[in-house]
Length: 355
Image (cartoon, rainbow, N blue to C red; front, side, top):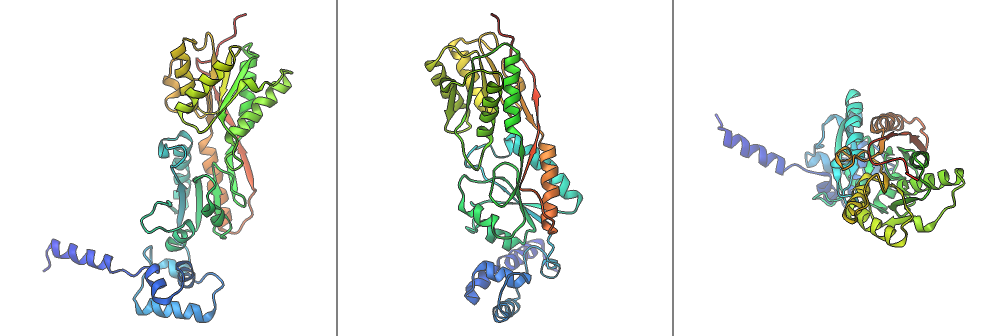
């Protein structure tokens, strides 16, 4: 009878000797995606190509690394998830991303789907499309891709069902917070507290990641409705969403003008930097400067004073994303864009302006 070490060694040898679609690609001379299409019975391949690949797979005793049923039923019950961490550098710690993923996982679990995280940093150097083909995922949830990623554009036009919950990808249904409406509410709250010299701090506009742009547009809309003239001196753009950028933006803003009594900041992380600068130079919050952030970061309620902010409805975003992705998988049309309202959270960083 074999001992445990012998059994383990045999198992490792079997795993290491498994034939992959990349091995078949080298054997047949076809690309990995073409091999995957042949094995899964998809794509517009010639009969000769498909027969050649299937014959090579049979000779090499190839077996899919997901499950054998994937080859016959075409249903792996796998959903790919793209969450890159090159821009915001927070990954699962981000209040939007973690909330969406928690609920999305629950929604997909109820209908028997598992999640598979895909990254461009994979050891095999696979593209998103190659990874989808290799694991035969049925759909993809795009949470946070890299900026201006050509691979994402290719994925959007690959025919693989996708939904996005943060970035606008042409051709992909996008479910996001109604940032413009929230920006308008933020300014209205500050106006109601007597503030008229209200600044905006946020990253510069990006056509594919419009959150900051939409919050800025809401800011402008509220000022216009209140007949308050717009001033470029009260707007400061940041290169990114990091706290240090918020700190630098506040410094630049107050060097340019001393009239500001309130600031709407496009994210809590930026707002933390703004608050740090205000504390450093003696601008008391909220007595001298009122601040509203965005995201309801976990730390927002523990700042001094606690930060007033907006809470994104991550559960609703995830539920709609799950529903629409399943519809796409089943060939049912879905809208290009869906806005979900945010909730204003009043804390201690906004005060009535004393005249």
